[in-house]
Image (spheres, rainbow, N blue to C red):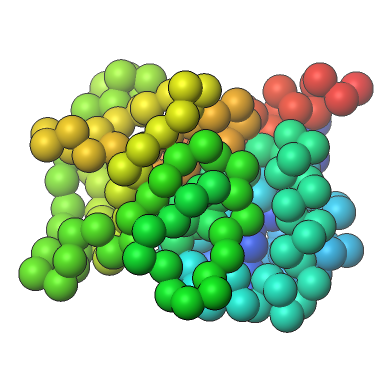
Length: 204
Ligand code: GLN
């Protein structure tokens, strides 16, 4: 689906499971760049923020001068897909953050970090996600957040059986609490690339 008309897409590469996202996006035919500097960010038409550790991503993005350019691009409508720590980075509000931890924001949601506690650090489950059709998504949760509150403009794509929200979309921002990139699941990345294509068409 990713034709040659797509602009290059980036993976935030200061921390996290960068390689896995690069591999999925390349498999889908995208021109993928690792983004560590403002110049590299300027070259991409969309960005994936991987899983990892959101407090470290926050610190490094400030240290590398990426925070403000990233916030400006998000405010200007750049498509972004955040998984797990990336979802936290995209959230306007975060519970159980470390002292002084900032997010980039953009998604009108409140997330709780490490929401499944120590007893259930990691687990896998199949989620039926109507927006993606069949088959269900095999979702891998690793010290995952959940969305505890979502604003009126946020579309809930998926929730667990107990109602906790684990995938959302707001405009061209997409976020999942789980890791499709480690489970051979490509539909979220395809959806992200469709957002990139739509943003590119809207700009030209
Ligand atoms: N617990 C991590 C955080 O707070 C997220 C874990 C993950 O990305 N797999 O950033």
